[in-house]
Length: 483
Image 1 (cartoon, one colour):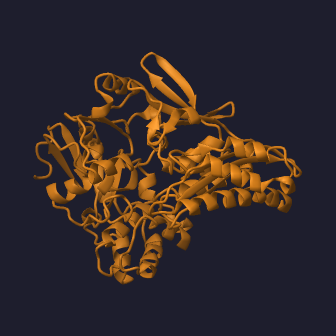
Image 2 (cartoon, rainbow, N blue to C red; image 1 turned 180 degrees about the horizontal axis):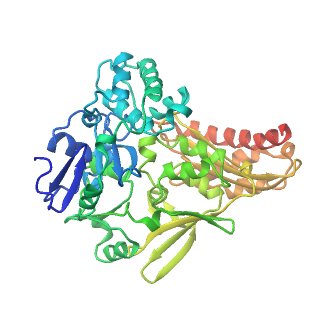
Image 3 (cartoon, helix red, strand yellow; image 1 turned 180 degrees about the vertical axis):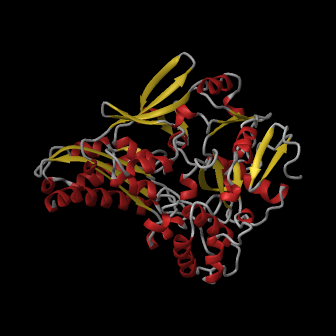
């Protein structure tokens, strides 16, 4: 395959500084495989294959300079066709005629490459971070550590990598990738990229509905971020007659607040959700902490709120939080919509109430008067970038004497995340000192049915559920007395 050739082909992708036109691409091919096997760009490494190690990190860019948008992703769990009409930046492309990229130079100067296998992934994560023109003014050691939180060093030599990141923060700017910017002409060319047989990219909800009504559920995959669904393709080798990519549907990425109701489009990424809760009137430290522990930056840049809910995983971290916030799901079909509480929407293990001709369009919830009434705790084997063993969400209102309102939800305790209505009844209206924690424990024993797996034993999950609920309820009173 040669660059800048045959650009009148249906699939058009810019990789680094070159445009590629393709007649067809296997709909089940990963971006990592495309880069390494089709383009022979082997700086991007195959590591875990599940988005856990970051060796495959690349940057995806859209839009024209100077308003282009860039974000780092895991190429091992991204379909190659998901980046059709976009630009992919790999480690081979970041150096310019002026020399190495400042991140590369900092890695050299800090002797941070070690065995070298994971180095390109670290470099690309740091390049993505330092591309901000304000990064040198605001970055800190903790920022660099958070940035490389989705990259694993097999040599465990993180100190020089962090040092290189700090150096790069003071030497990098938003002009370091100027040689890779998408020109106006390239932008028009990329916009001509089309869907191909087997992989349909839709740009509107009406086009999405048309595709839903012309395919059977068992033979199709609806994809936005795909950070969970695509692992089934790569690990279990699942094949679909049709993949419907909805990641470019703008109306499904809207976040808005009206009359105290927060609405979040199903294709909103967790990174956008994190930014939303990090500032402004809806700022929530608890939601920020929850989302920061949800995978890595690379995962959050593609994973969506709708994907997390529609996967209906019993350990999907957003689900317990949304249960106690009494969120509702809006399901849309050609002739209208229906609204379900999340308890109704999630029917069982990996099972939702979605009919074959409808889709989840948005999530809605009433914004709490104070986010201090909400708390979330995640227990996992690794603090960073790990799946929950148990997750607990609590919403509690009290008057410093009695508990006036309480909602509790658990993840990792059965075939789905559960709202603990019976436990809530025992606690509601009580003074803290009067709560019968033995009755709470007995009720939990009858309500939740955790399993033993590689992450935790059933006994551990059961014990941590009761211990965490008690500690979190106590903390609501302790924090209010401290204030």
